[in-house]
Image 1 (cartoon, rainbow, N blue to C red):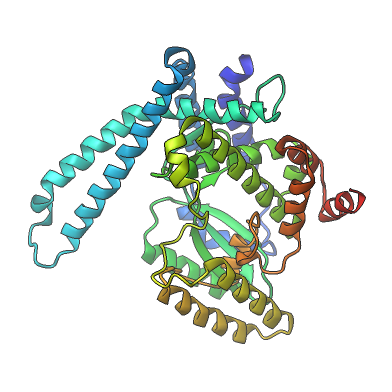
Image 2 (image 1 turned 120 degrees about the vertical axis):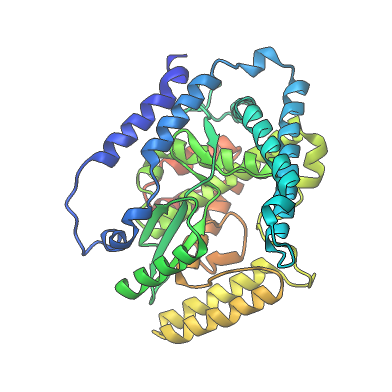
Length: 415
């Protein structure tokens, strides 16, 4: 009970202490090199954690499990996501008004829509604490029933907070696909600022750079992007909780030690996110489960060309790029990626940049065959480990104890 009440304050304070510890800057370190350009636009985690801790402390008093029936809880959640969809529709209409060159006074023309937008935002703000509490309970309940946790409680407790998420600057060498830098940036950076930052870092470091949007971040409480999809939100809650869990074990301690360990972490978290979210949907939101659970996890607009297989085509692209880079043909690989980017755009997938940094970031999420991971053997090995485990809990406990990809290979060879 004490842990549940104060964990939202304790862990942010510990994280803050680490972040505030001074260190010597070395320009031999790629992160320090990139930070020559990101200093004024980096995300303030300390402020976010302090605010989130306050939100979680206040939410602890709601206790919706005792005050609302299961059906009432689900109805509140469903209403919340309906409001998000309504808000997205209104925002799209506002954007059309402001983009219309025939409208001289966009603010006046959009006044009613803006009033609707503000009313919806207020409604969401009022519902958000209750809905977060409900979703935390539902995810935790399913995890406990799956055998994940101690004394029928996942550890650490499931806590998340929805807010605009920081963007991430990803830096990879040009002659290899490897994530050397991941720096969190302000959530509201404009495209012009993003492009300038990417170009400045790339020119200074002679690297491949990309600023990406993220759906969740495994601080504590975890950060989850607001979405109109119930299942996507549940998936992200469980995914980021898994990072919290792994941080208490060798696999999480060694997250950044090697690219293989990063892929093991992300793939394990993705597997847990998928399985837990689908069970929560089946149990609490059966009507939504029938429609949402069958949507592919890849979040891109549906292609007009039904025959175009995004994951297959991205896999083909990654394999070819790896082959070109392995032979030192860097410029040819970069030209090929740009050609392929045009192909994806022509088929409805609006990829702003397709480069080494893109694959360094997206390639670590290998819970499904194909895609940006290419022929990397790590993801398939993690999937085999899950297939051989008697339960999700057994899989998670086994992989959490691993310190290297070699540990995973030995576990599979011994089974």
